[in-house]
Amino acid sequence: MKALLLVAALAACDNGGATPDWSRMITQPKLLPFGDTAMRQPPRGSVARDWHATAPETAVIPVPITRALLERGRERFAIACAACHGVNGDGDSPVAHAMQRRRPPSFMEPRLVALAPGKLFAIIRDGYGFMPAYAGLLDEADRWAVVAFVRTLQLAEGARLAEEP
Image 1: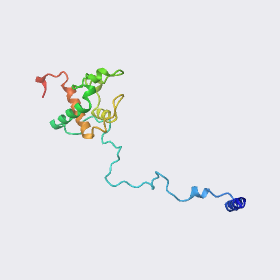
Image 2: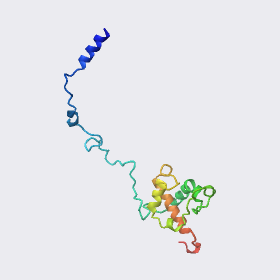
Image 3: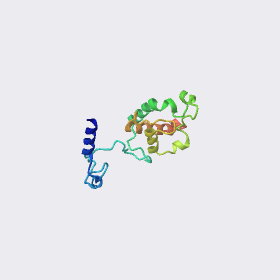
Image 4: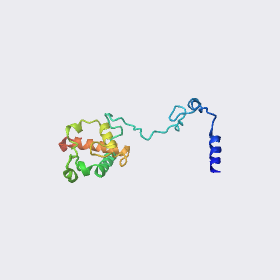
């Protein structure tokens, strides 16, 4: 009985010896994933999540430098940066002294003073070396505030109070 059912099942699967025509599946009209017409158009005015408004080589800070911006930068610097880079940005902190491999640099080093503000912004956003990315902790406005504050620390280094504007 079982053998008869097996023979009947196999006979039902027989396509008469012809091979199926798989080529029609390849040539049939269809939309390919990530093709031009298959992707839905984003809503007008939307911005991609990984798009950054500022290129890493921006030579100027694109927001007005105000006392409020510098205060915000000082506050964010104290929270996110000072533990490693030191309160004065000189790389002198208890955390830095405990680091075995490489200590965080001083912002007063000529190579860091020479960096474009956009490059500092990108380093804060993406991280560098052992420094993690801070894009999740500091939004874009806060990152620019920190860059402005770091520039203020660099300008104040070695300056005489009588010479300051």
